Length: 94
Length: 468
Ligand SMILES: Cc1ncc(COP(=O)(O)O)c(C=O)c1O
Image 1 (cartoon, protein in one colour):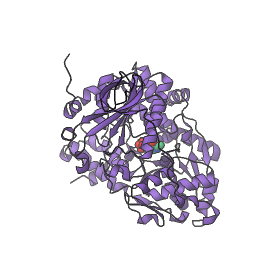
Image 2 (cartoon, chains in turn yellow, green):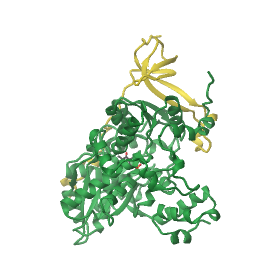
Image 3 (spheres, chains in turn purple, brown):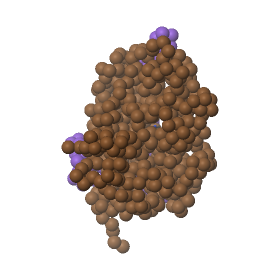
Image 4 (cartoon, chains in turn orange, green):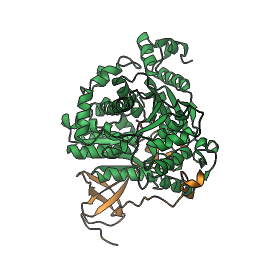
């Protein structure tokens, strides 16, 4: 397994509430799944993916959870072109 | 050390004490009965004048945003209506605030207050723009910031706009707690407040709502100084109701009593807001009926004992638009007005097109906000994501669309029609919800007067519409 060094920016995951611990009166589909949180921070000790670890967040708080991601990144985009939009407001639709 | 019980029910049971210590407001001072409370006293208790609010906001790059006339769009609308009709459409460019939306106005007053009261940090639970606003304001005031955000469905998939809003919070230096779908967001917010002792920068405090008053006041003054008249109608994208409440109060503050206050939401009827499955089947993350209707008919469903955002108190009319209509108008705004702006403001712009068509040429309709756009928020991102999630996207008659199944983008401007929602029905639903707090037989005259003011009607109307 690859060691993730202390100090690396990572994301952890933690089950806050198991399905049976959740709020009452949830829709059926939501009721069946756990309530899960993710948060990013700097790893406080060397660790491996999948281990329980601690992180220090950007404001200095400590959270514990399962190490899931190294260098969590954003990949949201403008999406694939939607041709239906292209002609709106152009000569083609006058 | 004794360990506190962190179970859902135990934390929720500590709600009142957690909120009291995280806010610097004792709501006990205003509450008169399970229904009535002194709303104006609560708003005044913030201690800020309008001048204070302007000053606080200008210190942190908020307010004084441009008001533009959309000349080309107005001309296009005039071509689709009866002669003599076609009001001028103006837009208040709220994207110019630090963090890119009007939510910065709420956040500015909250962060200022937190600092003044000696808190080390702020916590906000939000679907997004407000989080970015709070993070940006906290950064400027030297406060720590935690944003508690509903982001993912159980597969770990997030709506692109939600992902972008979370990114913005992190960009401004906030810790973002990213959660799966569920109303337990409030539980996490309470836990976080308890753990940190930070200020509850709720969207619904009097601080937050007074922060929006400057928006209404600026609109009233800008329109009057430029056109020599008050706006005839102001259209306001409506979710939790703070946008409408604060804007309407600001307009009244500068004497625009005759201005018609029009709410507008995207019609998402049929989709369940707490459903893991439905979560990613909507192309709007706010400004939709999934928030707008429940908050209008019961504002106190929030993270403070009494909500300062009470939209029925100020609303004259409620317009609904479809997702496809808003996407059409968003593209049109870009192509003919040269403004690329985000989803929420374009909801009210869509309704403004319908209103302008019914109004006289010499009248003025103001769209009171824009918000920023970009990866994730852009209408192309939304439509592309919808398509990947099996939603049908096509051009045609938007009235045929079904939320969660299809998005139909109009072929022409004259298909942008929206529809009116019956607000008397909402008022009656509100009364029915009040009856759940206190049986009708126990309502006092004070309760009836409060309810009447809270739905913008007189006590006789309330008496004639008592819930069964
Ligand atoms: C940009 C923008 N406009 C409008 C709204 C709706 O405001 P409110 O929730 O106060 O009704 C929101 C948030 O919900 C928003 O972020």
